[in-house]
Length: 218
Ligand SMILES: CC(C)(COP(=O)(O)OP(=O)(O)OC[C@H]1O[C@@H](n2cnc3c(N)ncnc32)[C@H](O)[C@@H]1OP(=O)(O)O)[C@@H](O)C(=O)NCCC(=O)NCCS
Image (cartoon, rainbow, N blue to C red; front, side, top):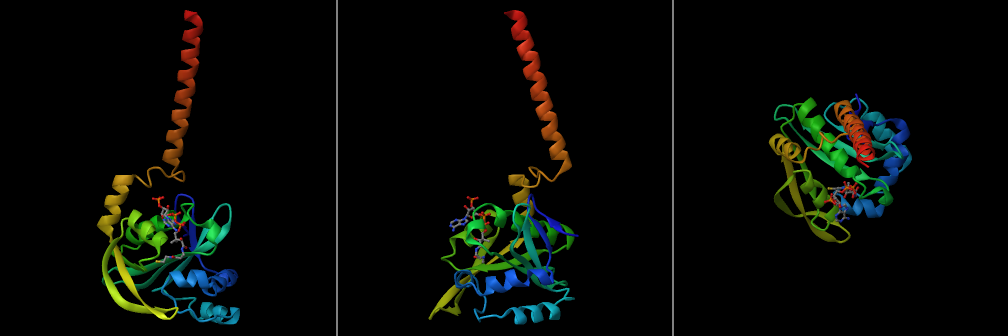
């Protein structure tokens, strides 16, 4: 089953995605924003990794697709702890031009819905660097909370960086969707499409009656 957001789809990775993923790991700008290891990676290593991890049921890495552009990035649910019902999550969009268009929000909302409503998880863990405004804004908007700082946790570009650990509980997610009605506005939802259709018909009928009345009164 693919995971649906309002407009993104999160699907299982396949061999054909390895070039995009390899390119993301080799992109210095992208790697600077995430915790990753920053070793140069060959396509052969990437393919080997894929073959090795094909049937791993504790680490899911999904490809984010949009209807216009196909595969645009990845979103993960990894280190799943089935007993304590938690997992770690991360997200990367491959191309700078695709950012700030709501893809990140829709993908994180879809990941949370899948984690809490399908897998029965109780919390998700993540992290951000303090200078990563996109990440801070994205996760804050999606109901995640900063829970602490791991001091000098990551060494990159010749300096130690603090890492803020963040998390979201199932109840945070439920409060958020109750408040912002995220899924109620979904265009994928047939009930919403039907509702919009009825409203359009209503409006047309109203406009027709109004113009007729107006014509009669004139
Ligand atoms: C983080 C990332 C996934 C966000 O995805 P996105 O599709 O750009 O996010 P959205 O368009 O849904 O934006 C989410 C919110 O963040 C804000 N935002 C996005 N980029 C921003 C930036 N560079 N600076 C400040 N705010 C930003 C948006 O305005 C939006 O807030 P709003 O709805 O209040 O306006 C994307 O920037 C990315 O892939 N970055 C590189 C990898 C990365 O940093 N991953 C996260 C590691 S923790």
